[in-house]
Length: 224
Ligand SMILES: C[S@@+](CC[C@H](N)C(=O)[O-])C[C@H]1O[C@@H](n2cnc3c(N)ncnc32)[C@H](O)[C@@H]1O
Image: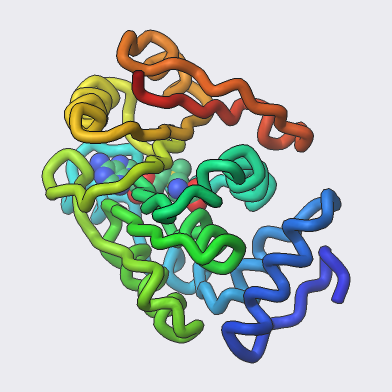
């Protein structure tokens, strides 16, 4: 196996071995090859979606697929390594989960329980199908819904990877702040979302070292 020519794993054990090998290395990951190896049929699903219909269904939202590269996912799990090893194990809520890259990696690398909340129903359904095919249903769940409208299962780690339009960030932050009243939470963000988290007085940044240039915008925050 090379890191740029990934063979499809036949079973969950092979998938886990593949993620562990990629995690131990620092060479680039071929994103579409890894998606395919996990059984995610992204191009097929995206090919059936059209922007006008999504606008009609969901209104004005940031529904561009824009999946973050596995370089960011790998950097995220390296950065939260100490959190991931806490017991009881933290639960992850991925807000705007797309096809579940964060979930698959976290379940296979750390055995974490990850719930993905995704606006576009077809994406959530595809992630759930692939998770079931890999026997990961006990760890991974995906739900279609607007993160501002549906109930959130409790979690200790939240991925908020710039998935909503800027004017929806304040209500998302308000909900996260409410969650943080009951327990310590950690939030990961990238890009323009970082500004909103940096300005939140109830959060402080956790300093992290990110080696991969592709993930240089990744930031971690904890509630205080
Ligand atoms: C940039 S993608 C990130 C996907 C995933 N976290 C990843 O990195 O692979 C953002 C995702 O958030 C979803 N999204 C946008 N607004 C949302 C909302 N209000 N509620 C739930 N999901 C939303 C989009 O449909 C899109 O799939």
